[in-house]
Amino acid sequence: MKPKKETREKILVLLNDADILWGFQRRGVRRYCNLRGWDFVEAKVGPKLPRLRPIVDSVKPVGILSALWCQIRNQLPPGFPVVYFDCPSSIVPPFAPHIRHDARATAHLAARELTALKCRAYAYVAFCEPAEWSNERERFFAEEILRRGGTFLPTFCPPETRKLEILVPAFKDWLRGVPRRCGVFCANDKMAEAVVLAANELGIPIPADIAVVGVDNEEDRCLGCSPSITSIAPDWEGCGFRACSALDDLLRGKVDPAHHFFIPLGIARRESTGRQLVRTDPMVIRAVSMIHEHACEGLRAEDVLRSMHCSRRLAEMRFRESTGASILEEIRRVRFESARALLGRTSASVESIANRCGYASVATFCREFRRETDMTPEAWRRKAKSAATAPMFL
Image 1 (cartoon, rainbow, N blue to C red):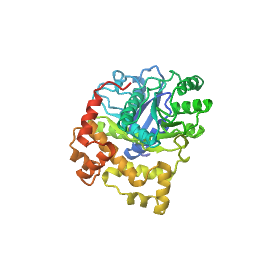
Image 2 (image 1 turned 180 degrees about the vertical axis):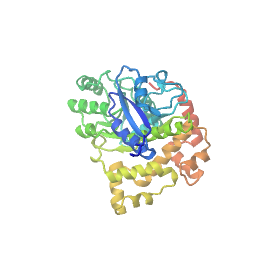
Image 3 (image 1 turned 180 degrees about the horizontal axis):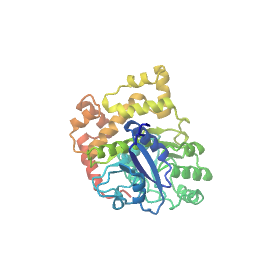
Image 4 (image 1 turned 90 degrees about the vertical axis):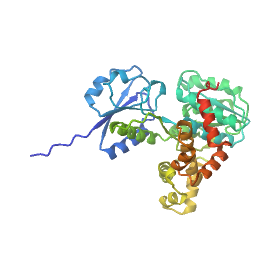
């Protein structure tokens, strides 16, 4: 008699049909599903929301991961477990788990990269369609530039189209009025590509007169431009993994009403900010992943160096060429961003946050926090809460 085939539990992943980043997120989902013994089924959905109940009845999932930019709760059975990821907060029900990219950490990286070039002024280019994540990046970038004593120009809002033949002329009109030696942070790599193309047509040298930073690190787009585009790399694989982990918690009865933020992996420095062209280094990717997973657990630079299986000098050189930072600097950055996220979004004490983020002592944490922000942790927390209730910076 044949043994009965084991039926694995399934989860359903609801995606927008135009999603270009799912390939990276899928890796994290697959990694968690392999650990948990799950299968997952993808369903891409167009702009007009179809009836979801037949899909759910057909797949029979134990839970859903949804990246859709529309309400879905009323199409599901009451209490059905859903985790939302990479979608607007406005469509997420109260107390539902939501995995989001950390806009503040992204803006911090962009500001640090551009202010290091000592530009005369700084500008933000919004996404070509209304988007909550674009507004958040604008707000935090403006806050960072002003805190660093820079001049922040009015935000440029492109036409609502993704066609470069329409975008580029509009960007040319805008660039004609932008002062030279300007640092430009773009909502994503698509907008950064339009800036580079427009500057090339106008004969504006990059990065001498205009320095450009994008987001998403789409290598085909960033490396396909001349000059190549410096871009912030979100941890999309970590997003998929965290979404599955949150769903697992939900299925086990652990309800966490807080939003889960994942910080960017770092910045891929290229020619648009005057850096050497660097391609992805698998050894460095593994090292960065190790830092993201264990920096707050007391990880040391020596631990990362041993994992790279080459000489210390070569490891440090390859790491710095790919990330623009030393291994120790990256460990400190991850700890700092994690601590700052906890300060802004929880009521945990400064001592508790210092311990949770791997600092040797509260004094060390406060000293490093003041060095980075010119503020104490408590003062920064009060300012962050005040800013959260203030109108959007225009």
